Length: 369
Ligand code: OSB
Ligand code: MG
Image (cartoon, rainbow, N blue to C red; front, side):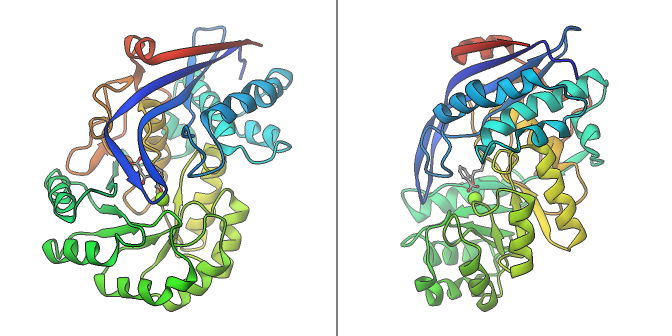
């Protein structure tokens, strides 16, 4: 894959509405759009999903720049890349920093697909022509407000509703939602806000017929999750605890979860995401594609990954308009009745909206190869 240049576009955008989880509220977003250019005019795009603050993982927008500029891009400059899978192998000596790695690897994957005139989905081995999606709803000022919001997204056709929970905003909230919407697939995401001391409290969730409870315990735990899973009927899904295929294997062997949320950035890129998918498919573990409030490029990567057959549950990748007044791709991602049609153009399948890219760019770094 001849690469002539790598560009890092730093963007600043604002979510339509603040998004609140157990670890904080986000509305201002900053992130890097990566661009790998070849000498035939092909341009591959990736997106870094790190946040401004290290509250979800340890990475931030600024650590991404440091890692990409000072360590990861020099590796790409020095080495010949034949297949996008080579990138994660070359990045192996650098510990963690998975979102920085993923942002660069994603641009290489898109470039590779475009050079070979195929969709990114096809390049990954995906076969679905449309994908099912749900929606993730943040913590709201009141239960009534949340119930109204849930009703709106059910009416819009989303395939399942995920509700963020934390101590003090959990059982009663979910009970009221379940009462109001008895048939709707509902799940809860705690973003690591409980401990085993809450075990009796969490057991109450078993009466609410939830699809799963996501990451109830510590961000770096798989041991206590295994204890919790033994006492809960509701499946546990791991998010924060899983950074690699190795983490996945250990969690599955321990019985720490029955479902895995795969986020491309959290696991270091599409190649590792696919390996986790393959392992889970072979071991009867359901997976779905998580979201990081992405702009259009990251959203497109999520869609391509979700075309793999093992993604058996609806993901968090909602339509662009749920997040942004104006997204940076054209056309924007549209979810109709909880379904996104997979684009058919080469690579990520969406064009970059150059005007929007310019409008939101606050900084740029160019590296020649
Ligand atoms: O835990 O899945 C999460 C958003 C920010 C940080 C962590 C998470 C989330 C979401 C939103 O749940 C997913 C999305 O709509 O992109
Ligand atoms: Mg989560």
